[in-house]
Length: 237
Image (cartoon, rainbow, N blue to C red):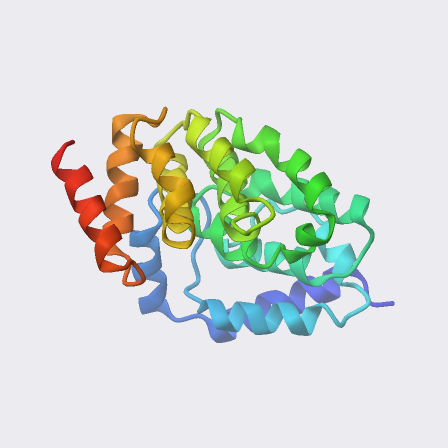
């Protein structure tokens, strides 16, 4: 079986081949506070590489290697690979939990979260797993929990619990607040009647409420009657 160094070398070589210096500079400006070197690899390329790596016998071993010194793209690739590799529920949740501390910017959170679809197959257990993250006072851990609700729990079976959680959760830091507003805006577009009471007289902070209404107003999927209601709510702020 190939060792972790073999796959590590392959990954770094491939990422450097795919790197675009101009894109790296652009991405750095979009991710304030990113603490890792940014190579400038496009997300579709990272997804394709993750799919390729998932077919290797040594992929799971790479997830267990020390992440010190990894580039931003290597971290995101690790998250995407967690989403790709099939395993039992305990192992999968442990891998997700190990990934969360590596998040130090919104992109390292949001890109892999959408690929964590395995949580839908164990939705009740997944919900319990996410609750400590939605309650976290660490900005990016909390963003992770909120984005996971957005990606996997805004549906008919979970919308009531998701709305209750989103509207009652105090958020810590700009990027957690933005995740809360983003998630609530998606809830409103999909379930306006259910979401409206959580926005009008709910327990949201004025800042999160303002961001939520703005994001709803920007949606192209909003029907005209609901758009007018949102416009009126914004004028009352």
